[in-house]
Amino acid sequence: MSKEITGLDLTTPLSVSGKKDFILKNPIMVASGTFSNGIELSRDLPVQQLGAVVSKGTTVGARLGNPTPRTMETAAGMLNSIGFQNVGVQSVIRDFAPKWARWDTPVVVNIMGENFQEYLQLAEELEDVAGISALEVNISCPNVEAGGLEFGQDPELAEELIRAICKVSSFPILVKLTPSVADPRPIAYAVEKAGADALTIFNTIPGMAIDVERRKPFLGAKFGGLSGPAIKPVALRHVFLVASETDMPIVASGGIVSGIDVVEFIMAGAVAAQVGTATFVQPNAAWRILNELEMWMIENAQKAISDIHRAALG
Ligand SMILES: Cc1cc2nc3c(=O)[nH]c(=O)nc-3n(C[C@H](O)[C@H](O)[C@H](O)COP(=O)(O)O)c2cc1C
Image (cartoon, rainbow, N blue to C red; front, side, top):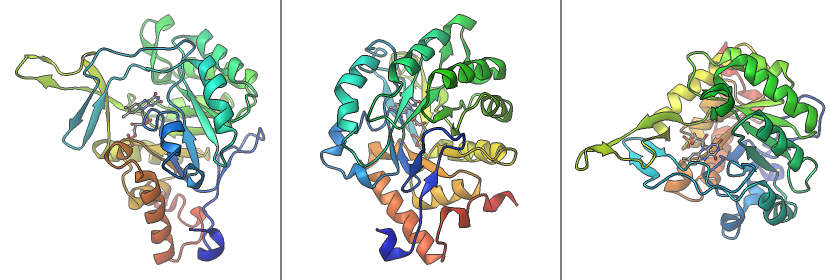
């Protein structure tokens, strides 16, 4: 639905640091790892209508990922243990970025290093590549150098990492936080101090399933990440907590399946929302959700995101 017809203005600024502009035409993005790199789906779906597309988690080298089975449906969502299967950063630059450059929708490259040095290498290699609008730094993966700790669970490590990335990258930096902390605020403060532009809250929640016939863990990698509607209340709490103490733009991720879910997250303090698991149920879920959000705004006489942003924070 166009701005001219509805009077709605859903534009969403995601960069506050004065770096490159990063303004979405609407708040609906597709989440990392749930939309591949967008190339295949863009043949059948109008990606230019989305606020942004987030790439699959990109690592320095290509990765084959974890042993199968790597996904399973749960009562209200899914478990995945893909293990960062991806083509590697050089292939992203060579094969995907030139295609993204022709899109009228920004692409955010999600990066994942196995250690400090790899994150920096990724930011350096992606610097100024045409077709990329921002980086989303996934700090919810194991930090091999610190003995299995996550960067996302240690405010000092997170601050050091994001500061170093901001030094080598002129792209707006979104930092994707982990759900595996009781209180997300210390990490949020730390990455804000380090120069991050926005936060993505959050990633999948660690979980597992047991195959009772085989009497073994169902997933080939034993553990996986839980996503889908089951995790929405947890994500909402993290967004609400962080938004109550910082003005950083927040991108919500976790169980979003409807336009009303997006309204809830915006009222809790997010400015944008990523659609993840819902895409596996309905490939065009993000477009339906955008349409539902627009209808809700019109029916409730709200003209802009700012009319409802932080409304539930009091
Ligand atoms: C199959 C699958 C693969 C994913 N791959 C990545 C990834 O590579 N990098 C990342 O940061 N998040 C990844 N995620 C997490 C999603 O981007 C999203 O944050 C999470 O699934 C919560 O949102 P949802 O409940 O709407 O799916 C993946 C999720 C799924 C289900």
